[in-house]
Length: 110
Image (tube, rainbow, N blue to C red):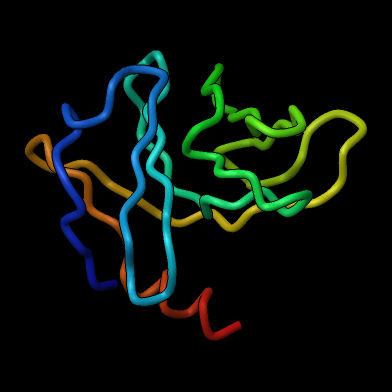
């Protein structure tokens, strides 16, 4: 794996998000109330809503446009909604967020 440093954990508020631009497109980084970090595609498959502007709750995010809820762990829509968003592996080291660049490139090629 090739890890890409995409910023400091403290740059993201608890229950917040930020977007990083990559060669493969925009990736949203989410921080839960417990401080866990997740990375996923920034666009809702329903109407293209910016998930980084959604509400982070538990280990999920709610789309700001039509309230679809997605698991940050699996990318699967929850409840009666169907669909999924891509998720990417991240790790935290010394307060920095590292995104799996190889996994990101592989997902873009699929």
